[in-house]
Amino acid sequence: MSTARRRTAPRRAVRRSAPALLLPTLLAAAALALPVGCAAPGELRDHGAAVPVTPSPASVPLWPGAATAPSPTPLEPAASRSPEPPPQPVPDLAVPGQDVTAVDVRALLTKDPGVTQDERRVLEPCPGCELRAPEYRDLTGDGRPELLLAVGLADAAVLHVYTASGDRLLPIHRVSLLKGFGAATVGTDLWLYEPTTASSRTGRLYRWDGVRLALADQRVEGIGPTPEPESTPTAEKPAVEKPPGTGPSAGTGGGPAKPVAPSRPVGTPPATGSDALVGKQPLPTPARPGSPGPTPTATPLPEKKP
Image (tube, rainbow, N blue to C red; front, side, top):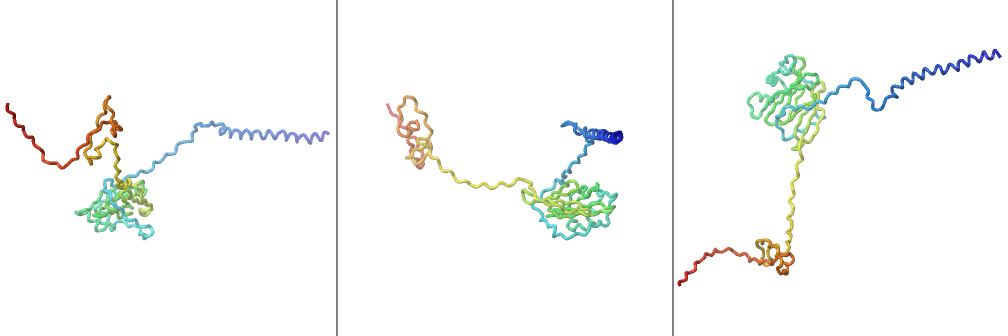
């Protein structure tokens, strides 16, 4: 019996110690779940500093005082355009300190091979020609502005965009437009607008692709109210018959309308015929108007002698 008790004693000790080992583990799990399970609904919590919100770029018009063109330039399909060679710097023209605002515009028009002879006419007295003041906007996203130059001719316009590449000036965009085109920048995007009709316009989006400003999108949007349709003439309304006694008599064949007679006073004998229906006394029949004749003159009567 003593041997059997010795063998069962260790087994009972192991069974009693198992709950003691599980208890710390359960307490630790309950401690981890306590902050989450005890949070009240709607309780404010601190999640750290708020993430700064960057406002969306706004549209900034270019040359807002320019007139609007009457019709658009035909859009050229992207598939039909041949690949252009990479732009080359303008020869014999330096950019002091990589600052395009210090570039002489007249010297630029003279030395840039991409400027045609017709465009150079703006440097001289030219009827209908226009050289708009240069604009400076960041279109490449490098934090430095680019030079936008618009040359207006008699019936067209050309837009040039240049960027500084080291101490050289690099043409990154050239497009022919109508003289009354509109332009705006949204962030680093360049939008060009040309009216399609009196109530719509065509917009083109140009975006920097690392080499030049490339066409990224084009759309047609409304800019004004739709013209109202022309009014259709309506048929004349038929004449409405008047009740008897309110107009000229049938026997007169038409004539000026008579004013309405006042109501019959109390004690007047009742009227008969159509006048009884309207409660009015009979009106005299007006005479038929004839051709006007000479106006008679009054003749004085002879005096009687006593």
